Image (cartoon, rainbow over all chains, first blue to last red; front, top):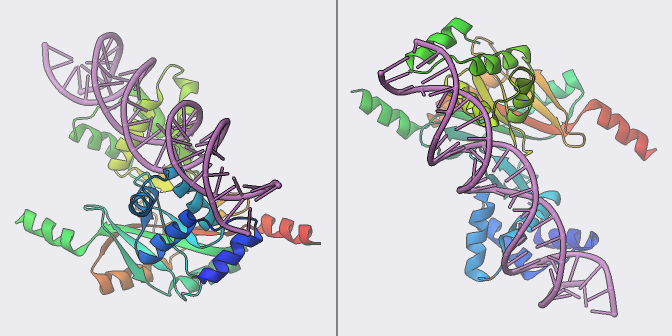
Length: 151
Length: 151
DNA sequence: TTAAGTGCAAACCGTTTGCATGGAT
DNA sequence: ATCCATGCAAACGGTTTGCACTTAA
């Protein structure tokens, strides 16, 4: 992900300020790398440090960070958006495996998507900037439980 | 997609009824194959035939059809869910190309995902039932417009 | 100093639900 | 006749917005 210094400079460039709240929210994401936080979860974490701040600030800050390319918005279909640090230096994106039974979300690193991107670009002329791949299915433990249940 | 007769029988099996409204909603999706309808769009279509029905019926029917496997829920990140006919007989799923500039959604047919599914299944044990792939980028016309704008 | 940011609460909007009525089986 | 389904309106939950106050630059 971009260095904190880069983020700070990008904020200033755009006429924004680096407030303690923004700093704190950014750190919450950095300390939860690899997890998918909802605005409400960020809010809960933030209240531990700043008990009297509002969730509106969380939403506004997250919006800003998404806009700056620091965060990536994810939708898992449960009605609330999740966010995670977006790392353009990471060579391969990861995909989300959502269990249709227990709802658990695991990740999978992969590089096969690149050939698919090339194929799409060639065929459609669509210039791909990013992708989100979500697989639905049964996680290992749910498969085991279902197996047991059947006998 | 499943034949209408199959859908009808599956409904009865589960103790549901085939009401005119459900029939109409099903037909709206059949007549808009390849498009991604929001609940509200379905509602608008439906009102043309049944002026005094409620949107709650649309949501309840869509839920039921998703549950029956007739429809597939899609999330494009604009806060409202879209739905399209789910066709398990179609050998290859399609992916959505969302333009980050104009928001247009186009589709791309592809079969490269199958090797990826096999790889994931092998490596993680996750039993994949379905997948949704969304690419973000610039569609052809937005690329052209941006090119013009730059000079 | 001053434009930008915050906190609060109200508004918003897609979606869900409770309840009395209506209808398919 | 019996449940299931519908329509309406109210409730819900995540997200956004208006406004007066505060603050980083």
